[in-house]
Each structure stands twice: as C-alpha cells, then as structure tokens.
Image (cartoon, one colour):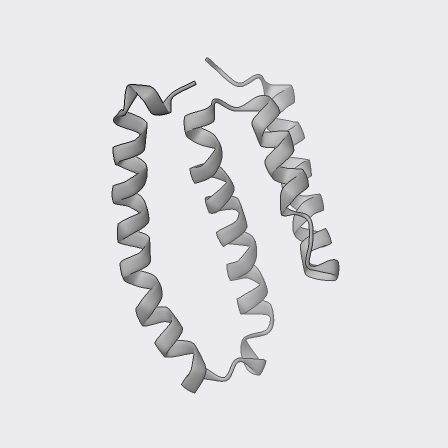
Length: 102
C-alpha cells in the first residue's frame, strides 16, 4: 500500500504541530499516533512514530543542551542502548508472526 502525497503532507504538518504541542504542553504524541494510524499500515506505525518522537526529543535536547546535567545523563544513555537493541529484536519478531498481523 503506497502513501499518497496528500497523506505525506498531512503527516509532515501533524508531526510539526505535535512537536510544538509537546514542547509547550508535554502532550501531543497521541494526536500524531492517531493520524498515523489512519494513514499508515499497522506494521509501520510504531517504528515511524518512534522515529518522529525521537527526532523531536533530540531537537529539544540540542536546544536545551546547556542545561543538561551530564553526570545524570550518561547512566541513562548507557541503559538506553541495550533497550534499543531489545526493541529492535522484539519488533522484528512481532512483524514475522502471522497472528500478530491484522
């Protein structure tokens, strides 16, 4: 199933809007997830949502990098790396199971 240019434009503007909303209020991801669920295939929604939210978070980290307390940051980063690997393994496993597909 291909995604139309109008759907891509909708996703683009929704991602920008929800990133601004998340920065200001702390909420906004649910709206983005709902729009993605109406436009994308199920197997693509979670990885795409994760990529968009991660990009948004990285931008906020860059913006506020002078206020980061790095003595607290490094332990979180070290714990985050194995979690990424585990998430990739679980996702690859789930997309191969026929029962997990809609």
